[in-house]
Amino acid sequence: MVMSLPFHETLDLSLCGNMGRVHRLCREAVTAAVEHLGLTQSRWTAMIHINHLPDGATQQQLAHSLGIEMPSLTRTVKQLEQQQLIIRRVDEDDKRSRKIYFTEQGEQLLSTLKVLITDVKQQLYAGLSNEQLDMMAYGLVQMEENARRCLTRLNEEK
Image 1 (cartoon, rainbow, N blue to C red):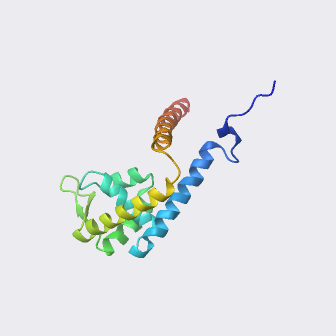
Image 2: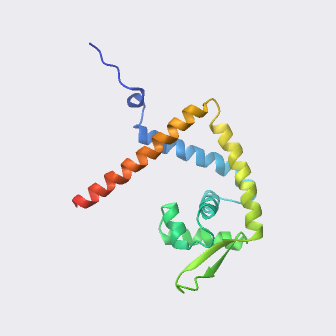
Image 3: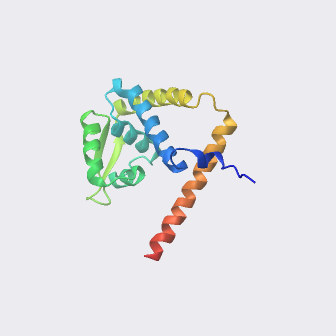
């Protein structure tokens, strides 16, 4: 009896490898769509993450949200500040920490950025039903939870 492999096992790369490739392509599509705004991938990504964090988030919170180290973030934050899209203020409770806020210009550009990202997402989701998108979303959330548990277990075994 011949057993057929599930589709996800027939992919050239592993399922996780394919997710990584698709993620890179999606980022490239957004970057191309927002390039005329003077935003690089690191800048538009930082702006989106700042928007999802509480108002006045610290640079450390932003670095954690982005999954990068502070030195990697510092240049991007300085560039956003030079473009007058954000301002950084010293945290009154912790003078070593700086909080990030959008300027009025930054808020306006963020609105434009969101519209462009929505347009790109519509193009990327073409041919997929809401049910298919929901199933992918549920699957990704579950895989993320599984990966976190796996990492916790592996770190505890060290």
